[in-house]
Image 1 (tube, rainbow, N blue to C red):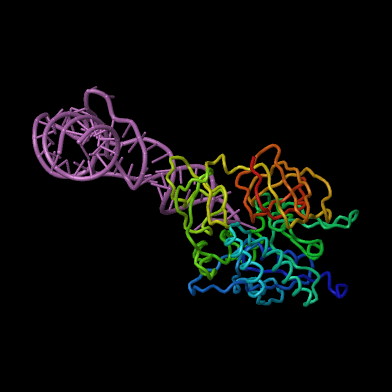
Image 2 (cartoon, rainbow, N blue to C red):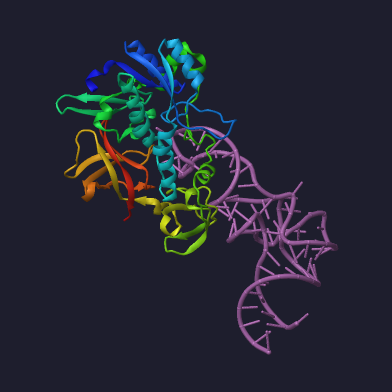
Length: 370
RNA sequence: UGGGGAUUCGCCAAGUCGGUAAGGCAACGGACUUUGACUCCGUCAUUCGCAGGUUCGAGUCCUGCAUCCCCAG
């Protein structure tokens, strides 16, 4: 069936924001047969809900997207992805928090919704490609017959971290026209050139399905069981306070602990099994390595021997030299020989770089302390 | 109901010979942010357990009361 797909045809996920608008426009300019699609992902309960835009993880402003599509002169559809979004993003998000992890819903959304469910829809429409407004570059290497991902020229907006787990088959069908831009301002100018109101929008910030940024509210509404309070303990196991429920915390967190210890206190570890949150000093939130699974590499399928890379353990963490070593059952160990990393957090992704290339990543299971 | 020591912001804690309330933590607000992370900036006691007194002026001196702690009953 694949051979029936039209390589000049592309479905663009349009949120009505700056980035996806510019992406759709650019593809049209490049001569693609562009179809605009807005995905319905989440039905807010609140009727006064204000929709957000932009970035990779945005809810849609259907009206803006439709208007923009009309101006560009492309067909436009609104598709319902609520069910798949609930199953692959929301449920995962909730389960991770219940388990004391800190999930990254944008990564799941990319993997299962934008570059899977939407891609399948694109194929149904006869389109070979799906395109988004991500700041990243996808590149085909003939010698190795692999699709590689390169960092965006706009370093500040680079989003390669959030697509570390895309498969070769997904990458083959992906276009990211914003990867070549050196600044968001250029992109904004393009969007603004034919639609002032879209061009003037700000960047997205919060997770799209929690627009008020109130995680505890969202989580307690989506978790059937009550969320039990528990103890804060120090690194020696001494009880030093009461926590409001594990979902309120992430490793490295300082705010909201309400612990006046005389020195800044940080979450060091979350022990979901015994409902404990461990508190320590800043030094105690640093780790020298980690164990991870859900491993994915761009240049090859399986890592067979230790490899030196640069890695980051959070979306906005700095790159650090790292040694990646394959373990049993598909896991990897990542050690940071030069610099301990702050707040290595189960549930977050560790992503690897080799120069400008994002060469893969994995989901952190646990930190390795000295 | 003998003696001694304490009582300053939610917590800890400076406050010299009486001179017109440091700081840390927490909290709150803002910036940054695809993580309520980190970080950064800003705001946080007209008032010092209470009531009087002495002083131009008292958290700092005096008197009484209250509460807490320690040692003796």
